Length: 328
Image (cartoon, rainbow, N blue to C red; front, side):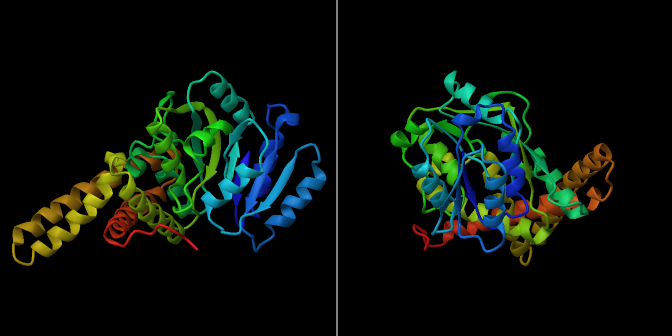
């Protein structure tokens, strides 16, 4: 297992506990944590866990560049196993996660296999619950199947992912010029090499969503910006779910400006916003009723709207900015 990590003292022990409870034989497991020089108590938590659970092999390596793809690559280089299972420090894989990943790889269902996130709130606040509900709904994430699907299928990407070590020799390491979106870009190269990315909903992990509105905005701005940087290299990989938010942002700005000279444009803007907010409210009512949490009536429209606008505006900003090929 390879795990990029930075300041995860509140969740790293949950991940390690989940790995210690895996059904896969412990003697064939090694956990390589690439720590981006954490400044909280993450290292101390890991060291304490190592002492209390010597049966689980845990190795910590320094990720001096402090970005996710560099940490992943450092962990891969430090690994010795045949299979690489990528995880995050704020995830909790089910007990059979690794066993199912390896079984799928041995059955040659895909060159990179992954499963479904069960997205949970990082804290018990109305905004955190709203973000978690929004991040697992199709209106919020489109056809990102790994957030909600119930059927196994080939897909364009999976969260985390498990693959044979030899795949890296074939398609290369993770792209360290991308601050995020490195998983998607890695899967693009797999598919370009005639490989297959396979999603199996029986492979499950719990993923903790962002806890606050501000952190959600930052997350989706980062996602959108670096998606734009990736699209400069792979424009053919743009999916409809990714095109809609920037088109929505463009339409809002265009109609607002055109309305200065053509009042009809403001009428169209009003109609567009009415339809959009009606869709948000419909989803919010549905989720609030199912979960019996009526604070979602406020939080879900706020969260989904923020995800769309932040991601869309960031992607547009990325496409009109100078290419960013390196990160110091």
